[in-house]
Image (tube, rainbow, N blue to C red; front, side, top):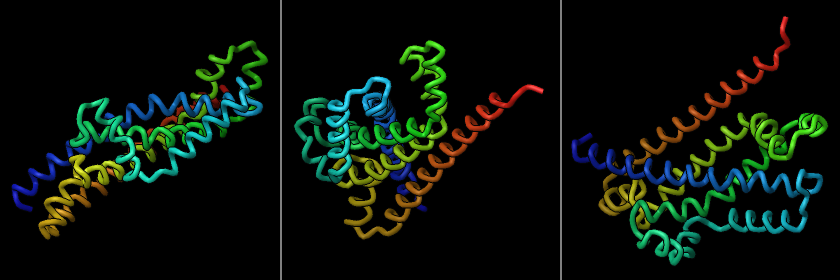
Length: 226
């Protein structure tokens, strides 16, 4: 690998990590309460609001069904309004966040629905408020699933960021298209592919490791004393 290619890959990787990390934090901050709200407002939930639940569910389904490349174009006015431009890594964060929030919401919803209902009922019977049920029962019990789901969301963001780069968003996708595909540089394309695969594997390994650690910690805390 030439020094020029190595430098280009390094810069593009940093841009991809910047897009993915910032978008990932924003997605978790928005998707976590969305998923909690989907569970709470469903029939039989702690804050049953069927009409609101249907509205939220419809919005989430619509958001998940729109292809990312179309979404990027559709929200160009919003991107320009928020960051002042539609080109570059910072601009790419806006469609990344918008695209991934519905996905994160469903991930959180599914993780919370896996929690044993008996634990929730026991907490309520002991006088816990809805807030304490959420923060002391639902979220802690669902934490391993939430971690694994977040890892999947981050991997999706890596994929989205590559597509964003292909249309001026910077990062590995931009490098692969402009300096690999258009200039017939197979080495550049392969280099970008290898880095993306390595990032995906690292995120998956980290997510699985953290989830297993919290699973183990919870199992140890639940073990009866001798």
